Length: 408
Image (cartoon, rainbow, N blue to C red; front, side, top):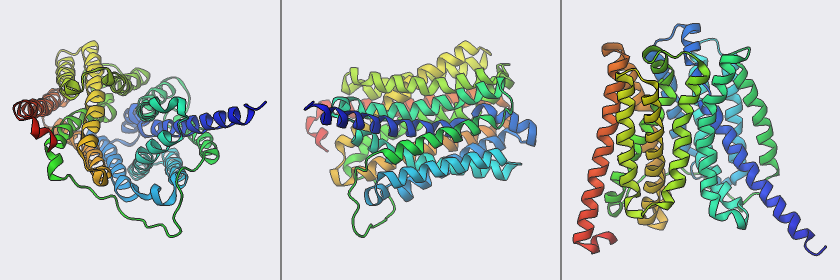
């Protein structure tokens, strides 16, 4: 009987932790649901492939804007108000997609979806870690990562299945997502607030900076992350086009599965990186991105779904390893008072990579064709990862010959 209050408290803490993780996953599911539905939008509204990439890129604008504007707000207003705001943006995005009659609605829906992701990326990650019970603390960071990337991977899988085999193909997934958001709102409502709100909250923009002493670490990590996130953007925005027009597969469920695979592989890569020697985590991530990009380009060139999918898996593994290792290195070398600024800068670079290269694909495909564009994009990603790898190896060689340089 004496243990009853403790047991109840542990159960409550565990439920709060799982509830916020569930809300995180649900929010991220909504951000990638349009991926397998893009061919349907093209058919219904007569969009070009370039316009599809524009619609996708608007998502990145929403994410970056929310990261910069609200990145520090949860420290002042509390985690729960920001999580409620993120869920509200996601719900409005669903409503806009459900009622969309053309380009304007799709652009607005993607922008709102990006805002929801931008709010949740930072706030929910911190909340999940803070709410983790003692026995789950070692896995809290990975739990937040799994909720984030897992949601991004599940989005196209769910939408692809519903779009292919259920009625109301361009709308049902958003209606389902609205119901899940309702459950997520309940989970956040019952979650404990982990921040003591000041009497007069001071709301400021998230500063972006990279101190001089951190640049030698930041540059290769950011270049590697740019390469990895470019691959994520490639599969999220243009996988339907390459699957249908180049590889010859139009099944939406298959398209969604292929698009989601790169995110699931990223989760595995982030999980496995702890088992690697710290010095070689980021270099190995770069090597895997190079190999994955080569296979993606080869799959497009020889019209092989198996090779294309293998490239997605290997590049996803590399992206996961490189992102987690890069973040760890940046956090370790950044001054504590500037860690948030440097980390936010890293994420802004990553989300720029999610959107801008995709626009390049859309433009290039208009002039040289989709197949040549895909091969060229794969080469671009491999080159970026190679540059990051060279920078890393040069830094490690310099550190070996001059150990004191590790302190700078």
